[in-house]
Length: 103
Image 1: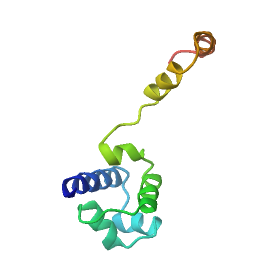
Image 2: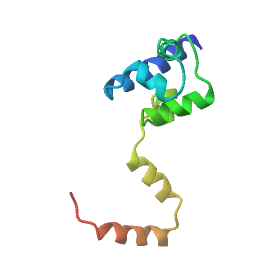
Image 3: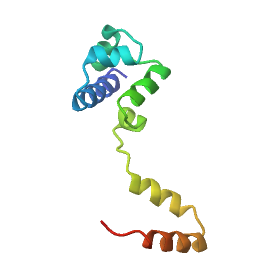
Image 4: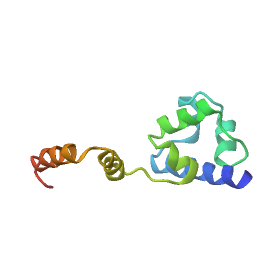
């Protein structure tokens, strides 16, 4: 468990740094002490569920990335949704996509 907390904390730290947010500013935004956020980032403490959600929201990051390093991909989400559709609906969706210009 300690290893997972350290990895989780490093992901929070890296994302915060990438966004240029100071630790004290993030702590204030999610309504926790700077010391508690420091402990989370250093793997010494686990956030509560609601603090976890606040961190994800404040850092505009997918929860699965913080938990297991999974990177959100819009393409994979679309493919997953498309796989659940009937062949008839897939053809309709394909025609809709064809109406948009390529990059």
